[in-house]
Length: 229
Length: 288
Image 1 (tube, rainbow over the protein chains, first blue to last red):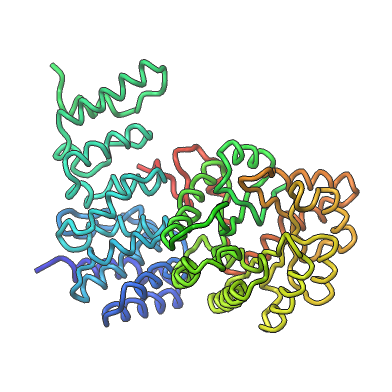
Image 2 (image 1 turned 90 degrees about the vertical axis):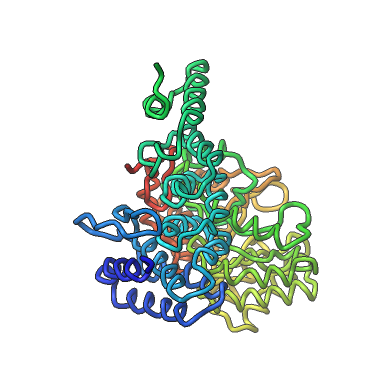
């Protein structure tokens, strides 16, 4: 029994009270279309337009929501926006609609998406099926220098679960290079090890030599990854 | 004074320019899709270019506290190129759904060929279908005839003039635009081939500030992304009031592009204190 139906319902329970009547109608209509089976182009257009239809603002207002169940990890949605929630809801509808898997449909959505859509895709991946199918989207996100996009690509449970050791280490090193925190990366200490510690300490040394700022948590994390005697 | 440059090709400018633009008061830029200086030979180049305008360019601008929006199109020159024209029109409708896209443009005539006419009409229809404004380029050669034909087309297609801007006007073309239409009118301040700040000021003094916009169209050629602030100074010296100037360089472009329903001025607050670690769409990357 997968988590998909329960997570789909839990996300809708968070979303629907936050939407206007028009927003609810738009979300419901898009979901019906996806559940009935629609092509990638239609999915792409609904995915793009839904942000305007549900409006700006946070997904939750006030109390901390329970994390949503994902394929391999729980997903914390406390910092999600309404458009991100709505877009994840469309992907969950695709997952519930049956083959092809939502992860498979997520890759062209990412490819054709503008930055906000790409961020929403990456955030939603961990909620979907348990497979590495969407890794190409994560890898592209890891190559990006659009900071908010890169941040989400490298600090989400799907990336932590499916990136190769090499790609994970390089993603973490690039985070440190760009001044992004490492401590919040899911499964950092499970995936990272002595090699990542070496790379981080190498970065620290480079910065010290060039009298440039040292990433705040690099030394601490490196020590935790491979304690120096 | 806050400034909105409604026509500038930031793709070809460096971050030095963004820094100077912000210092000079430019808060919003609209970048119309255009050609790259030499032909693109496949639709993939257009897709990557559209993605760049929506993605990397918008992010670059945000690092300097500037809200970057764009209009997308098959430009007039490449409308003639069968390697790309149909394929771009096939791609375009999906991209017109994107939030950062505030219009269709720049479209129009370059050398007034039959193909340019065909794709100009098709994109005016797309703009109408998607509820977006249309940004119309007018030719730099045989301009009067080009503007005449453009106006003929706008009238023939019975477009809503509120949703159309006819750009790159000169002393010869603005009377035509004003006599036959109530479209918005753009004026480009650009050395050699377009207006000087003084000429733009005189046009505004003669025709008033209603529906009048000015832009730099700064690109990879000899041009200046500060030409709109320079024109502001010129208008002040010529005796236009602060309210009149602000109307031309802020309220008019905001009003025109807001009609597409995608321009969100609330984003300006989030961009107000860029720390170069990433402000985008109101979300700070540093949130823990």
